[in-house]
Figure 1 (cartoon, rainbow, N blue to C red):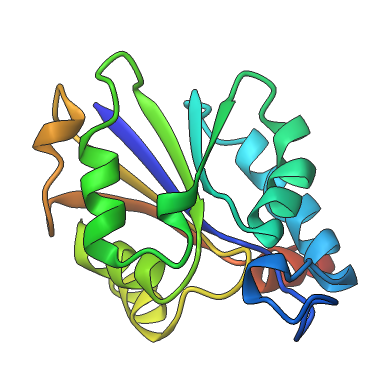
Figure 2: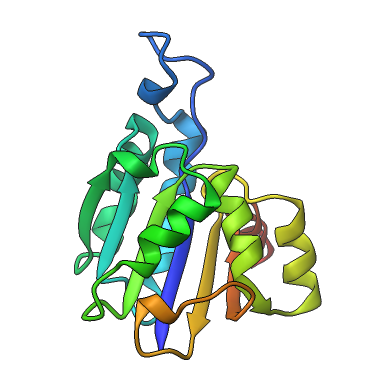
Length: 176
């Protein structure tokens, strides 16, 4: 079984000091949301062993906050994941070494959202409908694949185990 977590970076400032998109930083809500999703990820099993992360500032900062919740997760920053297309992310996932059973990919929309939508085959109707609309900032999609190697991961064959957003986590904590 292979476990895949797709995580969109946290909410960001509208523009960086440099004016470059690559340098945009997460804002206060993004820091709060990162901690919420990090705590949620810490409760998931199995924990990711490897995180493939875009080299943008906002993904670095999201990882800095989420990282302590996932102490056994090694991070690799890849410039090829910066604003990558769904197909580029998919090819990157399929090239992951088979020794890794659980993988986290931290990146950007629209590629991440498109990929999540195209990977999920088996899913409950409510989560599938919600995922069709958007993958919001700090949204996490957890998929399972009953395959022995990452190269066998295919479109529409993943089981959507969870689709969680910081907004949902806040609402459920307010309800308790």
